[in-house]
Amino acid sequence: MLLNESACILALKNDSTEAFSMIYDSYADRLYHFVVTHTKNRTVAEDIVQDTFLRLWKNRKKLDAGRNAESLLYLMARHQIIDTFRKQLDRVEFTDFLEHNECVDQSQTPEEQLYFDDFLRRLHLAKTRLSHREREIYKLSREMNLSVNEIADRLNLSPQTIKNNLTSILKKFRKDLLETELVILGIVLFM
Image (cartoon, rainbow, N blue to C red; front, top):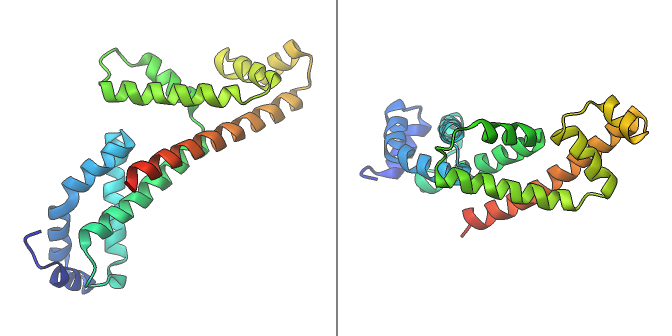
């Protein structure tokens, strides 16, 4: 950075939009590349970078003038990346992800294909941890798109039992995939 960081952070603490712009101009591109490398998604990366700088502005009064602005921004972005992964896994968008990738033309980048292949591998591993009955219910629901009532009729179970099983299955998937994602993310981010 070509500016005096301490003076810049001190000015930022005193509500200087010029200091904020200087920090943004100095680090936004590098921060974006860091985030997009870990999220594999340009839109998500743009949102995280924007949120990171928004948090910097909102918390400007609490900044330590002796602290390195770059390390602070990267730390804030790391937390945002982890939060983003947690939110994605909480939503359990497996079928949406699979459907999207089936519809996408074959012009995927090698990086996108690797990301999709890794997701499929982790999903398959999570499915192997299910009981036979759970795998059967999951397949009928998510892969064959049968309704709860259709599955209940086919397996001679009550619809409530099917709903309970689906809830349990999705919780297991969230747990398995969240643990895997956080371990991988922790290794990558903190190396």
